[in-house]
Image (cartoon, rainbow, N blue to C red):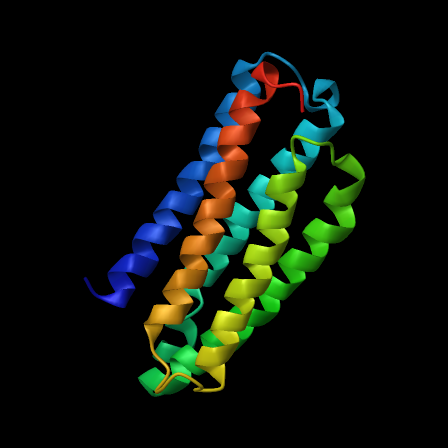
Length: 164
């Protein structure tokens, strides 16, 4: 499978996740004001991460179609992803820490540490530390963003069933 096909599939999945989130909230027959504070935080993060995933799925096409060499395309895209994932880790840490409880602490640590780890992976691609830059580390970062989106989506659906 070509990297362009993977990028397109990731974009489609992120759009579907954002759409399904709206459906879930609507079928709960409650407005946004009636969501519990931790549910509202999850909803905002889930939509934000899904939109970020969509942005990063399309990002490599921009330098490619501006005529950059494939290695330069992955360097530029990976640098942007490294910054984006570090921003995500800092955002999760600063905004979600006030909504933590014993049940969600593991997820919080996973999201922050995983985002930092995949940012580091994208940085290795940018700096060509593991060989010539390619789509591998970049696609791994997109996979991480999809994991975060999907796990937030599942946690949002299961929120009425859990005490967190």
